[in-house]
Length: 139
Image 1 (cartoon, one colour):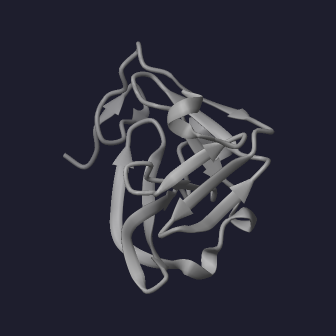
Image 2: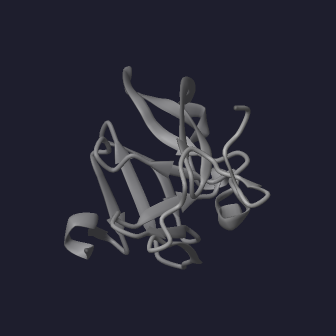
Image 3: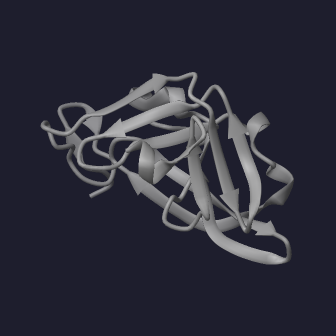
């Protein structure tokens, strides 16, 4: 079998759950990410991605991220709602933070707004601030 299909559409990874949504919204919130004690990203134009059952994800324009601190990773993941993600590690103050940033270079059409934007793994950043408050307080 070369591919899995529903009608004429190829299914990516596994069939989509009809009760799960993925929505993206442009925002003007000020978002700042700290890694290794340094601000590695700061934006006032994030894209917020809301996926049923998961915390909101904040996507940053590349211009608002210190991309000179990022090292391409070999890691790739796949999502039936967004597509294939590529990863970067961050090198900050001599320490490497593995696979801490991801991006969808060619997302599926339903999530085209996240194309080329960068998101951070919140489990491994020092902190993320939303409008000046730690993300934990902002939730």
